[in-house]
Amino acid sequence: MVIWAGSKSFAQDPHFSQFFSAPLYVNPAQTMNTDADFRVMSNIRSQWINPAAPYLTGILSAETRLLKKNTNNNILGGGISLMHDYTFDGILKSNYASSFIAYHQFLDDEKTNKISVGFGATYGKKNLDFSRLVFAEQFTNGGFNTSLPSGESLSNMKSFLSLSTGINYSYTNEIINFEVGAAGYHLNNPKQTFLKDEYQIIPKRFTGNTLIGVQLKNSNIINFSAIYQHQSNVNYFLFGANYGFNLSGRGKSSTNDVIYFNLGAFYRPNDAIIPYISYYLNDFQVGFTYDETISKLAITDSKAKTFEISMSYRLKKGERDGAIKCPYSPWK
Image (cartoon, rainbow, N blue to C red; front, side):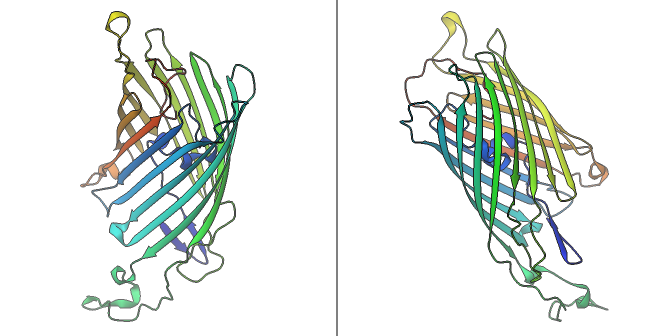
């Protein structure tokens, strides 16, 4: 969404309830922060379907390990991400192509402590369909007459380059997985204007992420995760938990497959309660969330409906032993 006020532009980046399915968008240091050799993740979010023209955002990312013959077992990862944002029923369309790189340094021989640093660059382009807009100068006794001059000096926005960086710390053993990180986006103050105003820029976005995962004795798993985001005058906070039921079986009933069924919920204060469900089979996962609105939008005749569908695939070379080294989490 873009709001014009005076000579300054305020814009808020898209956000996801399943933020863990868009890790590069949360923190560049999350690039290849996994024990897999290759990872693909995607998310489609449809927001506010009823009371207004829907917002539709889709993101797709792919990551892989670089310098795989590194003898010290540290990891250099690279990734790319594509995102499309469809706003105001298609009046405003945004496209982004990003590249990321991150280095993961283990701090001990047991490889339980790890510090990660990542960098990213995003090429962005926005297009506004002026033919579908109306302005006060076009209002007549018979309604809006779009053939009249709008009185506005508008032009399509030039493409822009945005830079980002982030840091992440993780502690992982056979039982616990803990992570905490912080990142900054649009650090180079990229210009974003339809008004030919040199002072209109994309405000910096700062994010913080954390995760605590615990593997229980029955091989079930519980994860607590949260994200905080600040951009311009907008603060965004989302937290929640999910419980993973191990369906792989144990003893004689066990299989070589790794199967988890996850149930959980997230909460965005004064905005929404978000049930979460996902299914994980070996290297593939699919997830679904629905934002149950609790803000003032909930009392409208047409209640806001927002949902997300995510998918991910992780490829790890070598034979599968039917076990997970560290507690499964959506991040990994």
